[in-house]
Amino acid sequence: MKHNAFYLFSFLSMIGTLHANAQLNIAVENGVIYIKTATFGPPDPKKFITLTDSLDKNLKAHPDDTTSLFERALLLEQFNNQLAKATSYTKDPIENLTAAKDMTEHAVELMKDIRLKILRAQVYKDLVYRFSVNESWKFTNKQISERKIKYNAYKVLANKYYDELALLDNNNAYDYQKLKVK
Image (cartoon, rainbow, N blue to C red):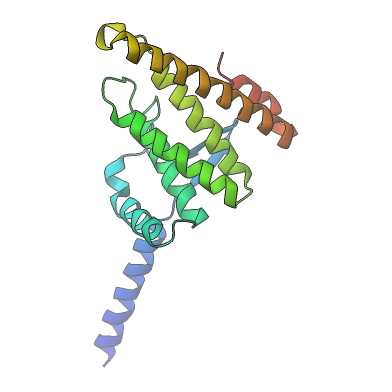
């Protein structure tokens, strides 16, 4: 009987530990939101597969779950930002950042949280970067024109959201103004 209780306790402790590790360690510093990891650089997507699958499943069942929207958008942003994927030779970062943009916009409609608004501005800034690279050799004139339109639209929105953050959070207004797209 004692052995069974010991194994049960060990099993439950292990599950609790796995659950605790699945929580995102989110930090906001200097106007930037990110996932704190033990390693330097962007988080490794492979380490978050279980969490991303769980969030995706939860969003299918509950599309208005603001916590899941926020965390999934943050993961998408962190896995596809300039630090994680510096080159823009593939369309995946743009698609993933667009999905993160849609999630943050939806979540902002449902919840008022400064971290969510920081994430929204950051996602738009990441999208500006993705469309700022001049790869005219790779695109037709029509595609170049469409990219220029998106670049300008995302730039305006990123700067608008950083201005909004500066008004909402006076203590960090200088940081938000520095993050604006030039």
